[in-house]
Amino acid sequence: MKKIGMVVAMQSEVESFLSANNLSVEHIKYGGFDIMKFNLGENGVYCVRSGVGEIFASAATQMLISVYSVEVIINFGVCGSLTETLRVGEVALVEGVIHYDFDTGPIDGCEVGRYLQYPEVTLRPDKALLELAKRISPDIQSVICASADKFVADEKIKEHLAKTFGASVCEMESAGVLLACLNMGIPCLIVKAVSDGKGGAEEFRKMVTHASKQYVDFVCELSKIL
Image 1: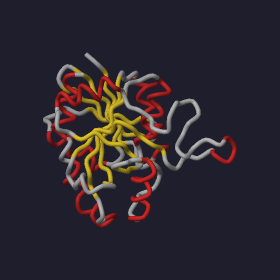
Image 2: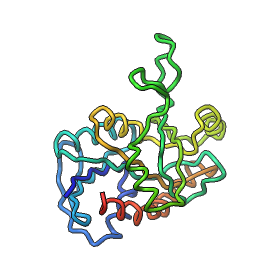
Image 3: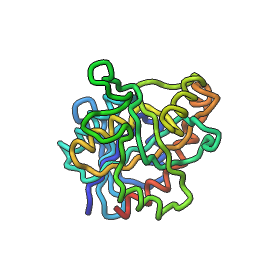
Image 4: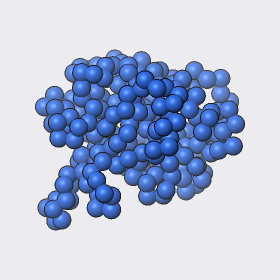
């Protein structure tokens, strides 16, 4: 039996997952976090609704690691597409994350998004988990995710993120989750479903629930075999 931690920003992103599975859920309150404890196969899951943004996501991830001793973290939720090849409702595996709003260049000459303790701008989730996920769903796309505490609706910013960082999606939590996991040596996998593209915030509001349903079966199957 393995302890799995799940970090999800919004209630709408986790509701589809919970309602699609006949789960016996124990609700736990730890500080400001709401945690849902349940089993998937032989594995025990601690799923936290972190709240939106990198800081909440990082704090929630660290809490699951430090308090509940989870052995692996899965971050799932919705994202915005930066490319025509990823349409609303499509699910993608994140193979790299760039915290594009992090910049210490004026004092150390480091490129935007780069943390000096890591060898490149792109932060990498766990390779073995990515390979396992691809065996479950061989056709799933692997993407680079641009992450920061900003909802990106401006097309010029989207073009900049795609061109500068080679990113295909953007969202607001994965850098915080992944940095906490890397710091603690905990394997991490990030799964995102596209909720919006050129439609921006209006499209997000219309499609977030639909998009959230698309990763349910994939995440559930993966969690059972970890």
